[in-house]
Length: 286
Ligand SMILES: [Cu+2]
Image 1 (cartoon, helix red, strand yellow):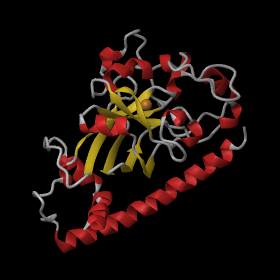
Image 2 (image 1 turned 30 degrees about the vertical axis):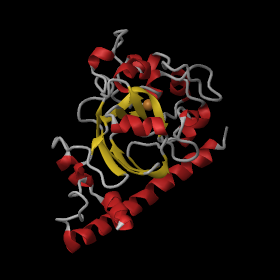
Image 3 (image 1 turned 180 degrees about the vertical axis):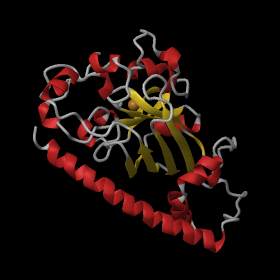
Image 4 (image 1 turned 45 degrees about the horizontal axis):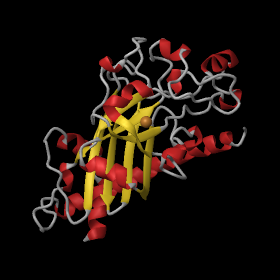
């Protein structure tokens, strides 16, 4: 029963998640397993409306969390031109590499995504720091490997990259993040703006975190770190189980469909793996 349920949770198609949104589903749970989701939407000012999107699911069982996420429309590749790289504070070794998108579960802010009012210095970009009152500090780093705490928060070699990616990882969720998710104070943020449509100031202003990439002559420009996509984590209706009852309404057929989707997601992950390999190779260069 447990195994079956886990598979079900992992396999729920994105479309179903979208359908469940807005239903105001209560935080339903069976035993100690929960499921939450976020629709990732463009951050005001930083990403034009409709230019990028994503969907994020997290199923939690005890202290184990499995994240399944897809995004599209983000910055694809880093520039290759040396002048452009220098101007943005990106080391030459990174030329043409997949644009890294560090991503986190932010916690204990206002539990929301920043609006244009968050741009307190009025430069037309919402920096990571300016967004913090809305989404809070980093609770968990959604890294591709290694630690999921603050130690990998800005590690671009452990971040997914490219315009579109599928991210799936199971890891131990820290207590602070778990509590914040349950308290509706958790927000998923994907960083790194698309130079093609980012606000102009983000190309010339240093990032708000003081990050300098290894081998760079200056601080990374704001486009490298500013929040691009954001979504508040909300209880997923899909996790609703009649009190102590059996998962109903699905039936055998839908179970099969879900399995098919599950394997489909696996194929997508292979694609992501290829991207990661490229970056790993690239990461060794410096
Ligand atoms: Cu973040």
